[in-house]
Structures are given as C-alpha cells and as structure tokens.
Image (cartoon, rainbow, N blue to C red; front, side):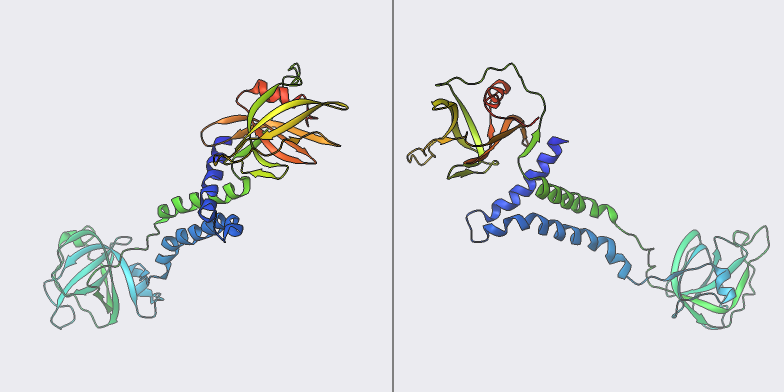
Length: 321
C-alpha cells in the first residue's frame, strides 16, 4: 500500500514541477486537483454523450395494436422475422414486407423499404409508423406462420424503414476507467504528498548514541536553520555530535550545493525542546530509514543509508513512541 501511495504522490509531484521556477509556483499545489477535475470531465463525456442522441422507442407489435406507442413522431424499433411480400398490401407501389414480432409470432406489422428486403430470421429495424390501410391477402410462407396459423397484422399502420437502422444506445463506460483511475491517483497523491513519511515503532533501544566527534552523512528535506530543501529532492547534510556546556549536542551541517559555494553554518538541533519521530520514507523505487526532527531551529526529515545509523541518531532525540 505504501508503494501504491508513493506512486500516486509521485504523479501529483510531477505535475507541480511544471511550475517550479515560475511566477505561478505558488499555485502549483492546485494543479493536480485541477487536472483530476479535468480528467473526471473527460471521463464523463463518452458516458453522457450517448444520452443526448435521439433514440426510437423500443416497442412490440402488440403495443402498436393497442395504440400504446408514446413517441410523438411514431419512431420505433422492432425486432423479429422479416418476410417479404410479393403483392402490395396498401394498393400503392413499393417494396413491402412483414415484420413478425419476436416476442409474439402471431402479431405482425407491414414495413415499407426503399431497397429490396431479403428474408431474415432475426432482424432489428427502426422506422416511423404511418397511418395507412393494410390488407394482406397473399398466402404467407410456412416460416412466417405458427404451425400454419398466419399472424394477425396491424390493419391501419405501415412502418416506413429508416435508410440505416439506429442501433440501441451503447454507453462506452470502459473508456472512462482510465481517466477516473488517473484522477483518483492525482487526488490521493495531492493529499499524501511525495515522498511519503511512514511512522514506525521498531527501534533498536540498545543502539549506542553518537559520541562526541562522530559524524553520519545523511540527506534531509525540510528546514535546517535558514536552509530549506524538498524531501522529493533532498540535500546533503552531515550529522555530528559536539560537546556543549551542559552535555552533548546534536548538530546538523548542511553541505555545500553543487555550485561550489561556501558551506552553510552548522545548526544545533538541541535546545529548549526537541522531539522526533522514527519511520521510513517511501519513494517509487525504495523505502529509506528516516527520522523526523522538530526543534527551535530545525523541522526536517533526515534520510539514512542504514537503520543502525538512524537509531544511533534517534537515541539523542526524544522520540515519540
């Protein structure tokens, strides 16, 4: 779980880096949530767009008999068997066929098409119902009957077929999965930050504290006196112990930056109050032993190469357990 949260935090951190060094750096924390909102909107587009497309009413032939079609233009969708007619059932020239309802094979409606219709066992058609008198007198093939019993045909309606049948509404919801997942990761990442400090309870109580003159190389993110560094891009620091008037003092010596300037002055971590919290810092690639220290001059997270080094430094600090 820590690794998953670290990946989310890394994604949000990468979006903030776009504003580093610009006048908009103060608004960089809003970029990840704003991008998450944009992704949610993009995810909603393919899901909501089909609902704005006009659709015919899905009906059965019996509803046409009963006058229960509610679409104001009589635009309907029917499913069933197509059986072409040799003679015109309306007395007018045209290409006609019967649509025998799939739900009730003893109910049928005459359909009119602008192109030749082939017999089909199963078809879904769309079209508009028109008020026209119908009379089918020809003998229907056995396939269009139920054991020789012909279907009852709607006597006062003809369905004029659309040039291209309108397919049923399909919502491509899988297209929304990836944007929603990315949006959730950005929101979580903006919340947890990067890297992630995870408190721990295991500490070697037998670890000997650093002695005066001993030093441990480390890295830090946070504030050491006037010096600041990001935990995502930590700076080098040297932790050492020196003697003070009332005991040993833990001191942090930030290292010179890559530009080769003078090294910052050492900062004493101890003072009137000092507290610490042991744990690990989880990044995308690794988990590093860490110690978070708060005092008058320091509010930083120190990273160590080994647990033993962290515990030796923690022995000099009042660690929260």
